[in-house]
Amino acid sequence: MDKIELIEGAAVALPRSAVDTDQIIPAVFLKRITKTGYEDALFHEWRKDPEFVLNQPSSAGATVLFAGPDFGTGSSREHAVWALRDFGFKAIIAPRFGDIFRGNAGKQGLLVATVTEPEIEKFWAVIAAQPGVAATVDLVARTVAIGDLQVGFAIDDYTRWRLLEGLDDIGLTLRNEARITEFEATREKWRPKTLPVR
Image 1 (cartoon, rainbow, N blue to C red):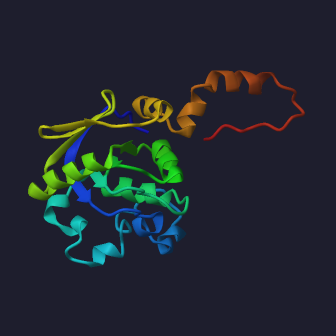
Image 2: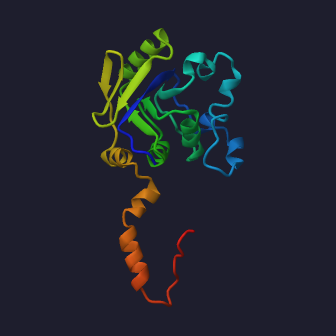
């Protein structure tokens, strides 16, 4: 997982509340067996509408999504995070998130940051006036900005630390690789062994 300190890129507004994981990626796409290649599935049903925001030229290359309250509610599918990430989003800004979605996002390198509802509405207004405007998300300072509009955001300290260090679950385990190797080399021979990956 890449370290995250600063995210810069085009902003997209999605002024809808309670966007659940089935809307983010419909269940039919969960049959795939890879962790990548889901950009075509993101908001699949909504993207059938030519007027949908992600179909607009101003959304090309977007990296920051400004969403409504309760984004990512519903099922626990990691595919929702994968689809957002594969489309190019690196940060999602919203007033509230589904708990499981927020946890999955942090483990997969997708920054989810919480701002207030009045603040998200101000961002939506700026984006509506300037489609494709650049946004900056500073994880070190815990701020998100579009032009002169800058606000602080909330993120739990542990997830923030993992994102800053670029540590997914495997990365966290590998921080103890020397101790694991030492343990495996000295434990009783009759116990099952974990074979190295080749």
